[in-house]
Amino acid sequence: MIHKPVYMDYHATTPVDKRVLDAMLPYFTERFGNPASRQYSIGWIAEEGVEQARGAIAKTIAAASKEIVFTSSSTESNNLAIKGVAEAWRQKGNHIITLQTEHKSVLDVCKRLEKSGFQVTYLPVKEDGMLDLQRLYDAITSETILVSILYANNEIGTIQPISEIGKMCKEKGVFFHTDATQAIGYLPIDVQASNIDLMSFNAHKIYGPKGVGALFVRQSNPKVKISMQMDGGGHERGMRSGTLNVPGIIGLAKALQVASELRELEVKRLSKLRDEMYKSFCSELEDVFLNGSMANRLPHNLNMSFLHVDSTTLMMSLKDIALSNGSACSTADPEPSHVLKALRLHSDRLHSAIRFGLGRFTTEDEAKYVITRVIEEVTKLRKLSPYYQKELEYAH
Ligand SMILES: *Cc1c(COP(=O)(O)O)cnc(C)c1O
Image 1 (cartoon, protein in one colour):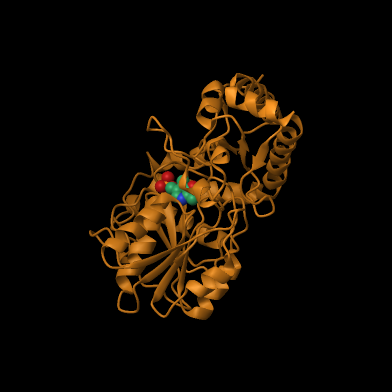
Image 2 (tube, rainbow, N blue to C red; image 1 turned 30 degrees about the vertical axis):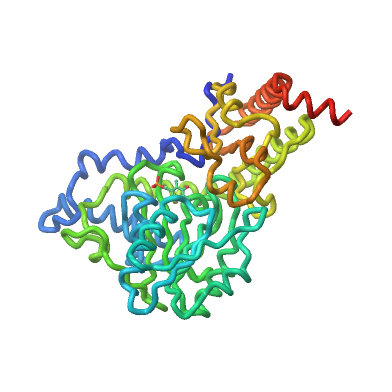
């Protein structure tokens, strides 16, 4: 028996793992203290929990405890990293480099900075979503203070050459920030080996709670100074004021621990299911295309265009499956996402793209169900499409 609707949107969010919830629960009740209230044991106990979590998180990415700043989300981490560096290093330069396929919480921060006098280069990507390293090299000037490039894309799963970028930034004396929200838990991350100076991630994409995130800020070789964006009590070593979300932080640490333990097996299991879906769509349907590189791709991501079928219409007819086409679906005429547009694909491919996000609770039966249903609905919708029928006539 499969539970419906089948959830295939794990890039949007994930359910909290039972192990994570169990670790969090005591911190809502018996261990409710404010970690800043160190004058009595109720406060220390909460502080101890937070510091253990901080240490465990740091260790997973090869950082030091004091390099982890807790925030409310990856959105906040991205804001703090980019605005924080821009403000603190304004004397050194006013140029920032990023990618056209970044998350909005990076792109919109950059747009705001442009209004206050910063210059931003939005690098294009190749047709497979990959950054061209030479283009990045050529874009760095004496004014450049920060390069912000996402580790792995949330729509097409493309993994960027992070270590090469880190090496280049280090040689050029430019700070390197990466949004690792989709990568953490699926890829082995080492901020030392990859020369990462700042890194954003959150809990709710890795089976932890919503409303908690973290920013890694390098404290040595080089020390990255950032301006605080939230004024107040000076929590988090002055980098982010506000009473800590203690249960959330405990949950983030536990989520990361569980994800790291399961990583190797999950990567194998999910990429196998994903590949089965890909192969079935390719063999059973004509005119299907993969969006984004297959070689450099998150194991649980598949993004495909089913030509001649509008993706919104397809999603509507697949109400038994939770999917996404990446567009802001609040408008009547949904525009393809900026990520797909940046691939400079043919318009039919843009409008027929669907993202499949698999995850920890995806079963083989669910993957099979999705394969069957998608093939069924694509075939049906194509039969109904006058354009598609015309094309077939021309072709024969
Ligand atoms: C989900 C996501 C974000 C935003 O994370 P929130 O914690 O929900 O703010 C940022 N970047 C990427 C790549 C994401 O997938």
